[in-house]
Each structure stands twice: as C-alpha cells, then as structure tokens.
Image 1 (cartoon, rainbow, N blue to C red):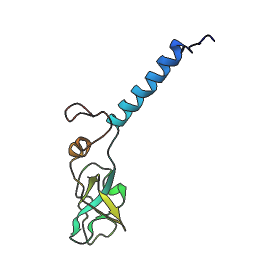
Image 2: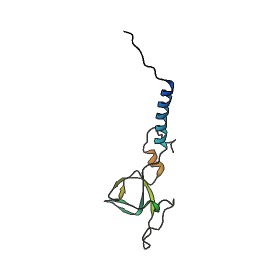
Image 3: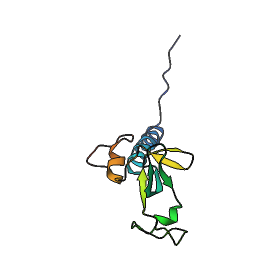
Image 4: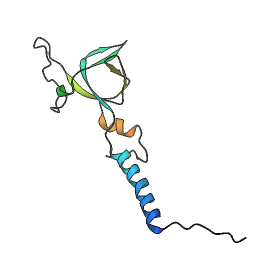
Length: 111
C-alpha cells in the first residue's frame, strides 16, 4: 500500500503562525490587572479598600471622594489579591506589575 502524506498549504501555515505571534504580542502588551484603591484605608487584616475607578481615572492621586469630609488618596493598585472589596499583596508600580509575568514578555522590552 502506498503511503500518502498530507501537505499543509502555505496559507494554513502562515495563518497559524500569525495567530501564535498575535497571541504572544497581545499578552505582552496588555495592561496588568488593576484596582482603584484608597491609599489611606490600609489595614493589616484586609489590605486597601477598593474605591470607584472614577477616583483614579484623572491620573493623579488625592481626588475628592464621595464624602466631602474625607479626602480619598486614590491610586491604581496592580496585580492584587481581591476579597470582599479589599485588595492586598499587589503593587502601586505599573512597570513592576508588568515585569511580574506575561507570556513571552521580557523584563526590559514590554509595554
């Protein structure tokens, strides 16, 4: 019996390779998981209290929260463990969060 080999078309190989490349690049360039937290709310038992993203969206800390009697020192907190409205064991440094991992990312290159 003659054995026949199945040959892949060049377009199939190219499209498959492009898919792998796209997945690697998007994983490296994506933003790490982040939560907007109040830096003044840290407790040893719970961590930082998660507040509304609108408190962090302005890009600067120290925005005024809902209550006018208390200022919220809001900032983005990356790669944290989240439980019951609190975040802990993360970092306030975006670049440090990106360096922690990601498919195909190097510590010096990614974005």
